[in-house]
Image (tube, rainbow over the protein chains, first blue to last red):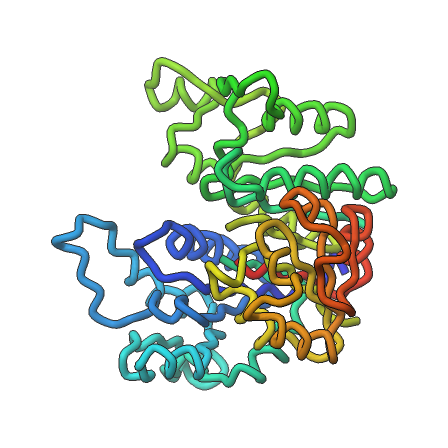
Length: 136
Length: 130
Length: 102
């Protein structure tokens, strides 16, 4: 197994800014792109708040790192799973989130959405298929 | 079997580092290998050589250092997370123009790639956090 | 091989146990460690939810964390297995992957 490609899943369950986990988890994700592994990201529970559109940190003085999520597509990280139930519980829809896309090299570089809306049950199946799950 | 352990919380404030230590010890006793212990987030604070816990309490950093010495553990502190929190080894202190360093010699500073590589090389990666 | 899930926070403080229960598959194993051990106790408001989990998942608790917090084997729900750190290690080795619900 150690020479093959592993399935890495980063599970984001915490809101950004209140703690550093979202930012530092994203830093690991960006580094992981250099290792040619099968990388996916999950946003569930309060993790869905990480990819809210229109984050404005001007007055709070926090570092706004939300643009880095938009760069994921350029790093060939285009499997982003958002849990439907988590959005609903928080009164959100996909429209509340950033428009995250990637260019599909197998389809004449067509721009495609990176975000996949999945149910809780589908998410459980996806997690089950991973080799490495890193949550925060 | 090979394990990589990821520790995301500092000493004393959370039990994460204690649980990871007990896990590592038990794994070694059972004949498994700890491929790497990676310290991230506030977990980098486990590597301070300057902590002085009360005598009736465990010394978390020294305990890790002793286990590492005994079993040649590779204990890696994330450089980016460490710099953010003022954790520097002598080389890094020199490079950054700081007048002191605080990382215990049992730990080494390196990049986040070491965590990903730890996940690739080990049979299991296990996270201890909050 | 099924998946191992660990939970380390009290269900009376955080949602992580609930999150784990709702996103773990039948036949998987859930290990309660650190403050999450109180989720294994009898007579709590989550006891019913735990009983439902025990019916189709393997629920275990780290005995040392239970004892550390003043609880004994007799305080926990029937069907929850007590393990030590060596047992924890075995569980990680015997499952296909591990997710820590933080």
